Image 1 (cartoon, rainbow, N blue to C red):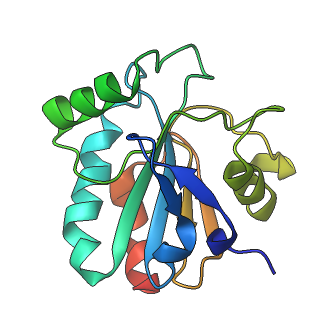
Image 2: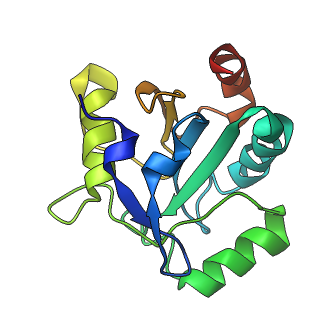
Amino acid sequence: MTTIADFTAKTNRGEELDLSDKLGKVLLVVNTASKCGFTPQYEGLEKLYQDFGDDGFEVIGFPCNQFGAQEPGDADEIDQFCKVNFGVTFPLMQKVDVNGGDASPLYDWMKAEAPGLMGSKTIKWNFTKFLIDREGNVVKRYGPADAPAGIAKDIKKLL
């Protein structure tokens, strides 16, 4: 059975991250953008990271420019924007595609594990979130309008 441990990702510094290193943690994987109406969710995501980080929880942000070209910056610009405007300390990865032929294999797997409305495997917009349990399994998918604070109860159950 495939889990998040079967994937790697590149950090925003270009380093390879073996996601098997995240086994044992509860994860919230989010496709992010700096110029989106949902961008203020960075604040709520950081709050979750601060509130539950010591209990084995981590947020992983994957910048994506596929929706309205709302993430045009390079890795340094994105990193700086998130730190300065929202105090983000959780890990940000390199920019990825979440849909289409060039989609990240991690995103293809998560979409298959937790389809959206009416079974759709497509990510509809920025700030779609996937909750991953300590064993590396996708537990739930949340839409862009689902505020991070509303996910806290589901995170607590997994911790």
